Image (cartoon, rainbow, N blue to C red; front, side, top):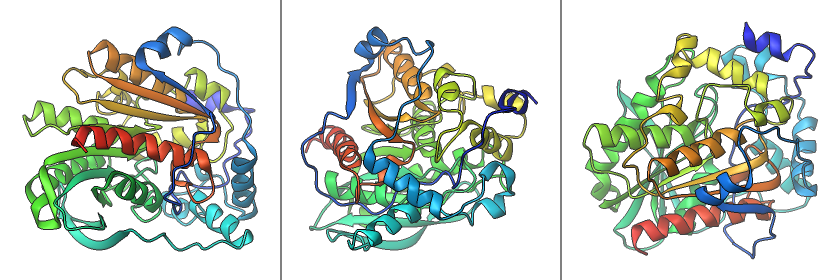
Length: 373
């Protein structure tokens, strides 16, 4: 197998699952200039996304989270079954451990009410978290898709990112546990994502939402699902989302891009893990070329304004850069930013990291602009 041959001799350093979103401190201070801001035009002018890439070093706060993750003694995901992988410690657990060590609260901050309910998926009902900000409403609605490589993530593990978007943008967030592989192979996650979006359009008013103001967001696998769902909405002639927030998305099936090479042994996500995710979810190697997976080769015309957030120390950085470039070429308004010194999954770490709070604010500001707030 090509992925196995390529990784021979590479240290598989993953100690935890591809999970995200710890608790969020909803306070946005000044940017620490930790990221390189670029819209899609300046991005393609400043760095060739096909050029070799150097691996970055975690900043002090990110390293502290990684140290806590290592102390939890998780096993490399790519050596496990899916059932075993879902029981491994997560970056969320590491953030909670760091907060406890610092003597800080681990409970979510006030300002958002969380309720549980069922929503309609493509093959039956799905459990969902509904995040509602304070106030009378009606509120805009964000349909949010968690990460986890279409295999191991859950709405609860990714609570932090969803909760931050709700509070910072003043919108309701609908986050559902869509079906995942290997029990439910491609395109199950993608079909559920479209079904949940349709549910939100039809039922927004019942959850204090405004059905005319709906957006899509997601992290990692969910970042790709957000873009794929916008494409499906266009093709099915559904109401289009007003905006898409795509956080370190999986946007292609090529694991030989510059960032895959530079971050082959990164934590908490590395190249062997991504190959494992593809194997668990996809029906065959041919599915890597399906436009719902290979978004950089999809028809991207007519999509809404899109914000792409990336981490420097992440195999998926090139995916985000290439997706931004392809969207721009298709005439889509794009803003893309890469935060230096942080890893995949940083977006949900606002409780401990200022750069996560800055990334949350960037996403929220794009949403508020789209909602006319």
